[in-house]
Image (tube, rainbow, N blue to C red):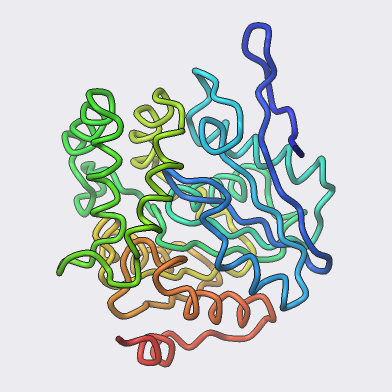
Length: 291
C-alpha cells in the first residue's frame, strides 16, 4: 500500500495513503470532508483518458491514512501536501481540491508558492473566509460551527447522516443523481474516519484564507453548484475571484455541494478545458448543465 510518512506520534509514524496512476502532466486530487481519495472516482478515469498522471491521497485522519490525535489544521495539512509533492517530485502539477480540500490547495500556494504547481482548481470551496467576523459580516457565526462540533462528538454516525443530507442537498431535497447505494458507500467511508478528526476538522472550515488567495500567482478555476447547501455560493465561490489575479468561475445550475459525483460530466468538462489552458465560459457552462 503506497504511503508517505509525514510525522510521528509516540511510537508510530503518521502515514498518508496515496494512489499514483497514469503518465503525463500530473494532477493531484484532494478530497473533501469526511471522505477519501475515492471521492474522485468519476474524475480519475476522465483525467487518465485525457493523458494525465493522477494522484489521489487520503487526508490524515480519513480513509486509509493514519489517524493521529493532532495535526488537524491547515498549516499541517499544507505541510502534508508539500511532503507528498516533494517525495513524488511533481513539477508543473495541477492541484484540485474539493470542499475542505480547497483549503490545502489555497494554504499550500500561499505558504509554499507555485514552484511545483502550474494551475489549481477549487471545487465547492471554503474560501475566502467562512467565519463571521467584524471585517467579514458575510460569514457564518461561530455558534453554528460549535453546534456541528458538538453533534459530531455526541453521535458521529448520526452526524454523518445529517451532514450528507446537506452535502447532497439542493434546497429542494436530495439530488436525484445520488443513489441510495452511493450515499451508503460515502457514509461507510465517513464513519471509518477518526472520531477525533471528524470533530476537530470542523472549526478549520472557518480558516481565513484571504491572505493566501492574494499570494497565488497561478491560474485558478472555481467550480461550484449554485444550489450548494453546505457552502453557499454567495458566501464562497462568487467572492473568490475578487482576491485572485487570474481566476475563472463556473457555476453549475442546480448543483449541490457534491458536484464531483452528481454533476461529474460538467465538472470533468470544466477541468479538462482548464487543464488544456482553455478559457471556461461560465455562462455557457451553466446553461449546458441545467437539468
